[in-house]
Length: 630
Image (cartoon, rainbow, N blue to C red; front, side, top):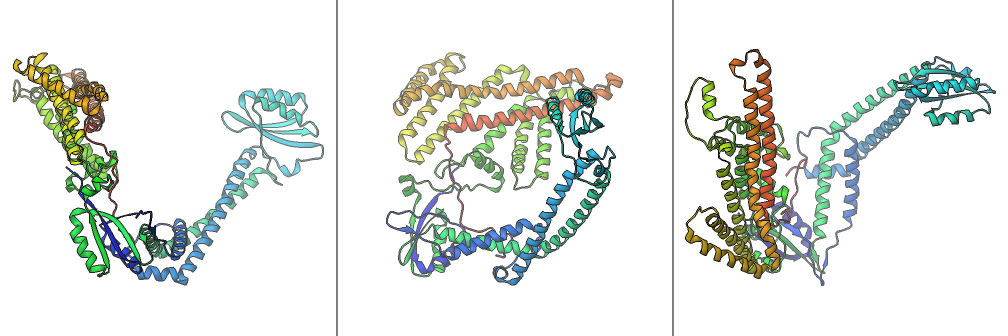
């Protein structure tokens, strides 16, 4: 129910041991280093080696961006990575990689020029004219495209001006026009621009456009062939060097992170000061580790979580739930990480969300569709992706959906006796379900009481949170809200609906009034304004029934209009696929709406009563080794 209790440690040691200390801390891998802050003590300044490491890191990142990714069959040792960074082999590999990439970029530029040239030549190849023989001193060649709808106007204008021209279709909506115009009369062309005429440059060629197009295509083929050869050579280099380049970059990442960690330390003339967080239960283990790895010349002090709370210091949050709760923990982190000293809502989401979802869908067949679809998503997606945990939550939620399907006696919108009668078991009734269409009032009362329970439970959790934080005024206010919801429910149930004994009216009214006075006292009159909001939150749970009824009505319409009974004859050819598709669509609609509304009831109505969020995840100082050996 709570995140792992954290503590803060302060470690003081000799400055000469700062690098071995950082390496030991990374090897321990269970501390989150925080920046030491003091008015009297400055932070450590990393050595001049940092610039060299960053320079090499940028170089390797650039090289890895130029080579192809390759499979890494074995990891590389740190000594091998360090040797490679100083070797002539790296310089030779870098020279080859950069030379090939420069040549490839040049070829790409040539291809882009040829692409534009070929597009232009294709337009002019329609004319079959030798352009080298057309230009004279008294005539100029002009060309352009014009919409087909304006072609007649252009031709009439050119005839009046006694200009020679040729027209060819460029596309379905436009034509290309080649015009021979007398010197000094080029102004005529500008009048055509108002009618969609767009000039294009005539290629500077000495033969027909078709011959030049063939030449351009031939040259394009030669360049593509050269590109393929270069890529093959680059692929060969990538296979040889990708592993060692990646390992060397990873090693430099480690070194850079160590320099960053060093800059977080406090520093005096001869000592360093480190502040870090770790789980309080691991302090004894770390103390033993420190004695074994830091020698005797260090001082270690523990600052407990209670002291941190008093100073309102936000400690990092570490959630520690069983492995089976990982998908629900993912949703908690995705929405808002709890602070280190507030309730972890993961296990609460585990119980409440599937119940809300199951009550809304509430159909055995739709629950099976939910389960199978979610199972498929889990199998087809990566465990590290976003869809995988959502699929697992969906699978878990399908179980109460099936259970509620039996409670409501719904099998694709039909009671079980109708299913049995289809298979020849007439008038067989195994149980009497709480059918939603016939028990709307009862189910409305149940959903609203579920809202009362959920909201009251939320206020009770808020009370526990406040007590844990030693915020007694806030705790009393939360408990007053809890009492207000419970007493108000009893009062309304007794006074308006006569559902409970009448002697409860006066005690519940007194308790409700007392709770309201307490709320005003501790939260001010703003607390009074929250009353309609709380009532609205409770009534909002009626959406569970509303969403469920929509699915039931659609299913009943499908069953009445398209149920494929044997008496339909040849219509079954149409009815069977129509019936299946209709129910699958309705199932998807019900599942989607239930996922959205179920999440809303949790994160908006419920969590707002006890959950603040805004925590910072615990990120221990350790390196992920993908290419470097441990």
